[in-house]
Image 1 (tube, one colour):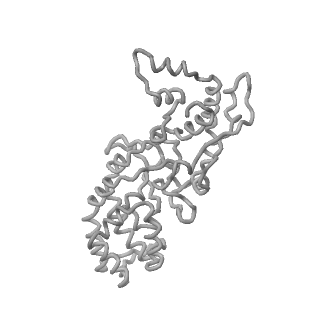
Image 2 (cartoon, rainbow, N blue to C red):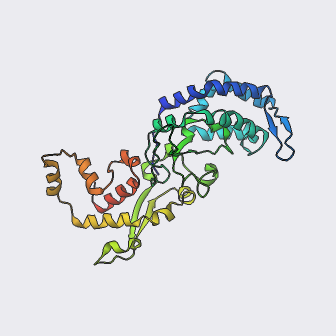
Image 3 (cartoon, one colour):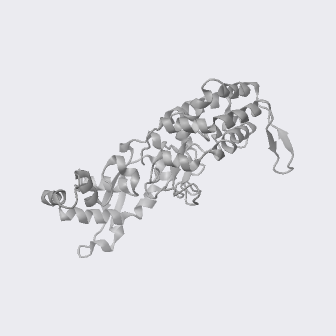
Length: 317
């Protein structure tokens, strides 16, 4: 729902943070030093990668192979997946030897060791990009109050992307929980990476069902939130239709505001107020009751809803 913007500097810094440890683990994998444990017997057996897979792993330790993987752009992932499906399909089969090998390298000894607080700070988004309903604040490194970090391509199927910068999406617990995305496969569910989302992919509108003329705020469900534009997979996985149905009161309040007919003279009064100096955007923000610029949608929950409905009602341009 909210577009994230690429940060090449942060992606490179993440690579430098995980590089040495990953190379050590990859070299151990090449030598066949990883073992898997049988869940029933607890017996341990070595995982021996094929000659072809050894060649691929070796390519990650030379040149810029590993850097290209960690800093891969969001639109590069499909090509990497296609390559693996053609050459090493078992890497993408959950619990297979190859899958477990990659999970050990990239998740157990890669992702689990990164500075997640630092990562979240660098991505710099205040609300969940999947729903724009909840904040993703992280108070401090020591705080237990931290947002979820979703692996857009889940590590259970795509462990190779466990530390790929553009696969790590700050999100809310609702969207990254068992009832929503969690281990959902974007390739199957038709999900779009937030870094590839466009502003026109989602657009809110509304439908008036019934409004009490004498007391219009008495029935929040008299107005229904609708999606004029949407990506079907997102509505299904993140339950956006169902969730936004319960936020119709926001739209109802905007409709009532629109009837007040904020005049140009009122706007001018705010601009000329002696004690404060407001820009046009700030005046729009006060009238709307939320951020009014597209670039600031991520700063407050429901900003996308407010902007779309506010424009439809003529509260802002």
